[in-house]
Image 1 (cartoon, one colour):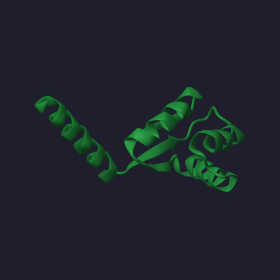
Image 2: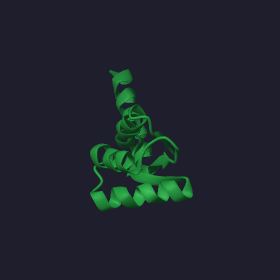
Image 3: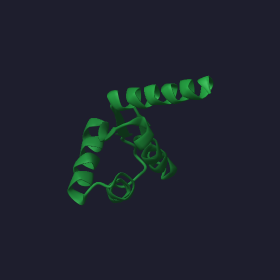
Length: 93
């Protein structure tokens, strides 16, 4: 029983740490994918509206990268994997 409580406490501590430390899903520029493909990917995977997706795409193109979503690592990981699966370059920072 004692180890179960410790595990629950550890789990709660990890969750609290994850919530306190906001992470950023960063999308990087490449010379392969089209603007339309990146825009559609941001709409479908990150749930951006069209204007937000277009703005992020232009920032990626002109600045080399853009934070496209902020949140907990747990919430950002499936989005990052989705972008990577589409051949985009992304990371969680």
